[in-house]
Length: 192
Image 1 (cartoon, rainbow, N blue to C red):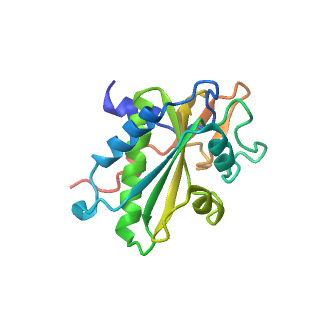
Image 2 (image 1 turned 90 degrees about the horizontal axis):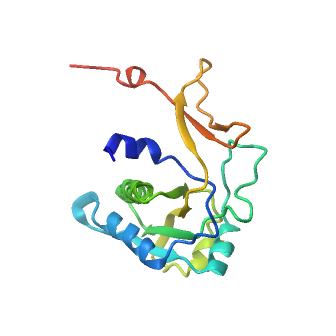
Image 3 (image 1 turned 45 degrees about the vertical axis):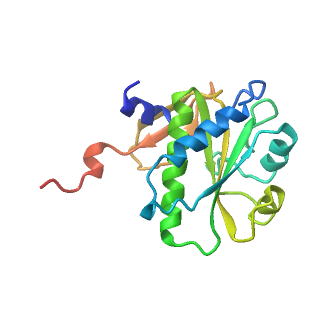
């Protein structure tokens, strides 16, 4: 697959085939991809917690919030929930660089997941006290992002930005998820 096509298909996924769980070795492969990606100073200070056990996944799922722009949707229903999670940890006394490293690692995981037909949702809207307790996060670390993962069940499509400039994503009656993107000409503000 062409890399641009991979990026286009790597949209946030919020519905999964819950009856097709990802195996622990799949999750380890995703973390290995993140391990190999660039990071500031090559310090490699991020750590990862992999969650694949069903009951722990359900408990972690209950501590997350999904798709704030879809006001009439409370998140994935039973049968469409993630089958795995990866928590990305950074040092508690982190620097700005750790946030960038977290973004790089999470984007790498999302692209890797997409390359295998899996979906990924980067979640920052979670209970920041309960999640670290549930996952037994070391005291010197904090959860930067939680990634919900599984075999993708929904179709996600990039569309043109509407005339009103709204960047809010939406779903049609068939459940297709649309993500508006600005045009390339709108984003490039200088050419030298």
